[in-house]
Amino acid sequence: MKLLLMMLLMTEVPKGMTGTWQGEARPVNDFLARKPIPVELTIGADGRVDGKIGAAKMVEAKIRPRAWYEWKAMNHFEYRVDFQLEGELVPGLKRSGARILLNWREDHWEGWIMTAGGPFGGKDSIQIQARDLVMRRRD
Image (cartoon, rainbow, N blue to C red; front, side, top):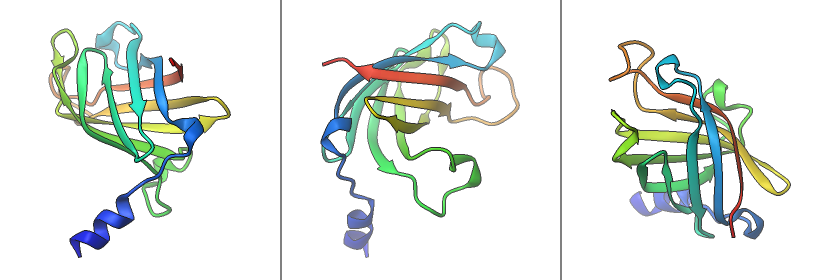
């Protein structure tokens, strides 16, 4: 069963989408003073992803296509990257993990970032969201 699950989750990323990508996302949370959050991803052909969001390092990250059964809010996104975070996203703010929802647009990525956290609770526990992410190839 575990082998079957691993095979289903494996992703081969088309060559044009691999490489190192950089961009910025605009936070929607008021307490972040709307300063853009820098994002850098390196996407491998096997779907593994390395990178940073703000000052936090992505751990155990993998890109995969959105499955047909995933929740409605993801209907407008083709890919997702799920990962844990090590370090502070921005000074004074840590989150355990995050997700980036992405669309491929001919030669670049566009998307949205959502961290772990809930809809309420103040800056120490609320979900951080950043939109208008555009990443261009760095190579």
